[in-house]
Length: 407
Image 1 (tube, helix red, strand yellow):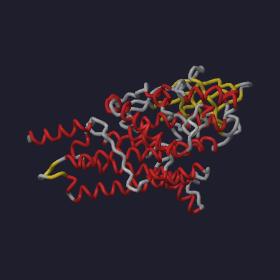
Image 2: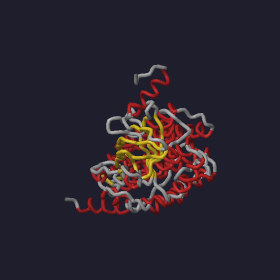
Image 3: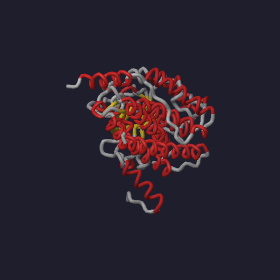
Image 4: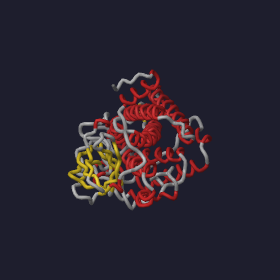
């Protein structure tokens, strides 16, 4: 065994434990952002470096959620950044929401998921479709992190086809009796409330706020995940849960409700995936400059440069895609199909960047001395949830051809 080689590896790995991330903006896209966006992003970047990076590898290795970070996420304004301040949001725009999600996922996809679910899938539907009483009761506490929420749509037998859901409610005077089960629910084991979608007796989908202390409600945790290991995931099980009609979201009926929430979350994922890619690229670039083989840095070899050049090219294209999407979102013109395109493209891009970055790191790339394998495993979930890669392709296909391949 080459002791000199091992020593060089150890020296580089020791540096890798520090969060030395540097931003990469090849097309000077920062010049297209407002000062408020840059301030929000830099604040979250600092928080990630201080609070997430030093602990995330250990939590991921133990498959444990750093639940104490919920409060920190609230303090940096990561819960509902683009919702009004009076309802517990940040009062910022959709571009700010995007750059915040990018920085969080640069730290870890699971941490971004914690914030995405709270803001886009719990606070957003209550704000968009809830009564004034519901907004006042729940949103400020969700925004401050006093309450944690989850979103119940996906079922054990209905993932890509949520309209086929089997969860049902039955009218019982001033309440509904809810029965059913939801699967792959981020935050569910620690959630205080769940925004749940179920079919009523007319076969119409309605949304309701279910509280964890309601009789018949349970949220068992899912174990054995090789992905999103620092994010807590579980089921939602409802056995004759009596949900007051005052908890039903009055502003929407039908699949339009949950699908609009998914669009909001997918928008954040499109930005977040860029953050994961940037972290992998940054680590690979630095490693290529420090790792010596055949008497020179591996970054001096043509094939390494090819990998890095292709990485930053694809990242730059993805940055431009979400920047334009953010502009459209601010004007309320971003369509679900446009959001689908960005989600699909950017997650696939991030996965490819992670795989190429792993190769540049060589054998060290599979260790937790570097973030590469953690990002890669996380992105295997991100490419599936909130609509799989193939489903998003079909959404784009339907949008450009006018033909529905789903029916």
